Amino acid sequence: MATIRERKAGNGEVRYQAQVRLKGFPPQNATFNRKTDAKRWIQQTEAAIREGRHFKTTEAKKRTLAELIDRYIRDILPTKPKSMNAQGRQLKWWRDELGYRSLAEITPPLLSETRDKLHQGRQPATVVRYMAALSHAFTVACNEWEWLNDNPMRKVRRPKEPRGRVRFLDENERKRLLAACKASECKQLYPVVVLALSTGMRQMEVMGLSWADVDLKRGYLILHETKNGERRSVPLVSHARELIEAMSKVRRLDTNLLFYSDVKPTVPVFIRSHWGKALKAAEIEDFKFHDLRHTAASYLAMNGASLAEIADILGHKTLQMVKRYAHLSEQHTSKVLEAMNREIF
Image (tube, rainbow, N blue to C red; front, side, top):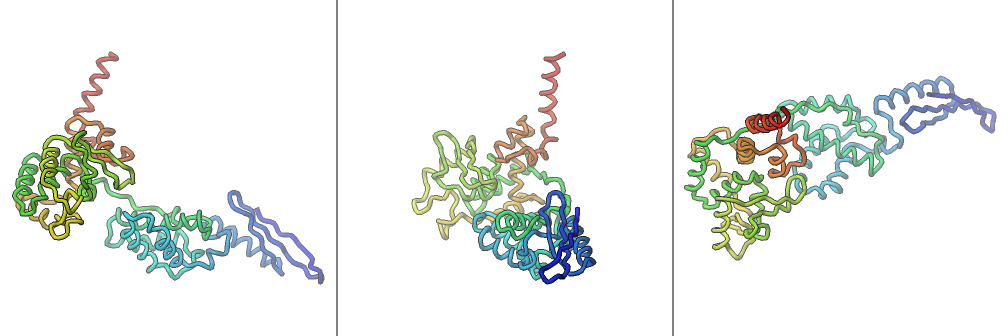
């Protein structure tokens, strides 16, 4: 709803006070010498509000996107050490593309156009992460700095990500890979791979383990630094436990790490080249270290574990991430359904 009121100044001149009121937005006011200017302002303001281009403060006109990104990188990113490097790189891309524009000029259509440019040569999942990084910066600018009235990225469609990859080792591949790892000149490669395969832990979780995280008496590993930020206990069983127990008897005293670099014991061992050689020796293609985690989850599903149990072991907060293994647990699901039907019929 918009109104125009005629007002007379002290010198007798006529002024036109325009007001725009739209549900969900604060009222906007402006005064003009001519009524036609007031009407034009009302039309432009209403359109800008509906399209998400109007902001309640002048900060959006004074500030550029580059200023927003620089402040976010300086003040917010240091509180997110795990994603600091990746998100910093992503935000700098947006700054290079649109940093010279004022925040008032950053509209959903402009972001959509830039998203399409970002999509060239990049996978949908990568584009989504770039968009998420900038979206969070906008959210902080809205809620904490009050530079914006709304997050323009909220209205921009994100590309659909492909279904999660499920690549796991079959029995022959597993045997060949473990044999190649055991024969590697890097003696730590074999226990690293066994631990990842046995527990489904991420590579960073395995490589960051210290002896303070190991409870051999109870048979548990305590992960303090995880991807979702929550502490997690991981059962240590079978062959993996035997290997860790053997390592504990000959552990070095100049490092707390389980898997340390021979050159600098205070940092984790670098296994990338040794891992690649082991895959080549085992004649395994299209397999990444992270696929050991998929392998562990797949084995759990094929051995009757429920999706909730798999999520708990892998440290996922929701079942969404483990639904990719649902087809592997069909036999177990069929048995559960059969048992229920026997009871009720």
